[in-house]
Length: 390
Image (cartoon, rainbow, N blue to C red; front, side, top):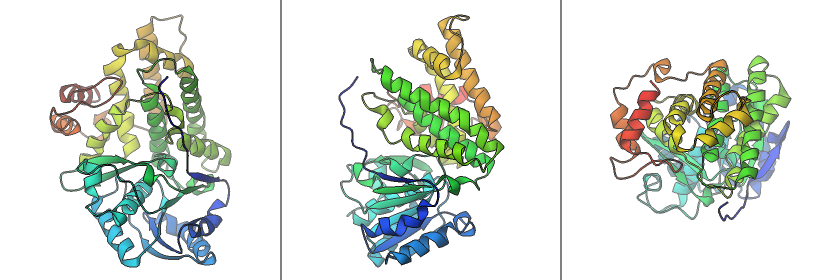
């Protein structure tokens, strides 16, 4: 196990009706907020009305910027930065899922920065050390952005999707009411489950030894998602199943489960190129990329893949050799995702391989870098993974 420092600063306010307290939480940081949200669903459901009422009751003024779309755009963030500066807001309040929260984090950094926000995502600037406080009201269990220091942004010019990781953008508080997710369409539910599972897989595949405790925490979280996602698709009003999924999604990406280990993250980077060009939902892209990555890297540590197959998917270890056990685990993952209504091939998403070489080069900036930690992948490796995913 590696040395580590653990600090989980986000205040989680979990349960029914908890969005009613958002005004009081925001008021701890500022009396003026930027209220940031996505499309019309939060308005139609009455959630935004409740948030506005709570802010007003707490004496918090606000300005609004809606319209965030999946794979949040740099142009929207720049609009938010200009608005936040002009209105002198002191907190950015995100109401929505991972895209809205990631956009809010970028606005929070850019408002205080003396340079263009994209510099932090492109790597032209060092990690930022300050940002406006961020608070969230989560509506989609998936990205885990509600308690992480990560944010992903797409620059429409060049179709570049890049990530920022910084301590200063970890939300100060996040309100998690499972009831708020009950109106989600089936496709978003499935994509969210795949995203949560992918966050767990990225941490699971490590070269660090003697991490059995956190292995088992990750395995237990995977098993919980596998158990409740089909229940939710069968009955969207199942509060208890939603509660399990929302809490699992939060823990999957707040770094608790990767303490003492070094995760991989290649599949996320490979998928970012896919969704950056084709604007596919992140979870949908991960459901295609992750099985292909698993097949390609299987020989690196077959025992770890076999362990996952046995402990999570219930593959009997005695009936097959280790590689067969591992491959059966991958097959059961694909079958599970198909059962949720997800595609596990690029062709199922309607994409070919005409831009595979381009995406692979962008993922490693030509051949300047490799991607991943479990197995360090070159652009040639990544192109082969895209082809395995066809």
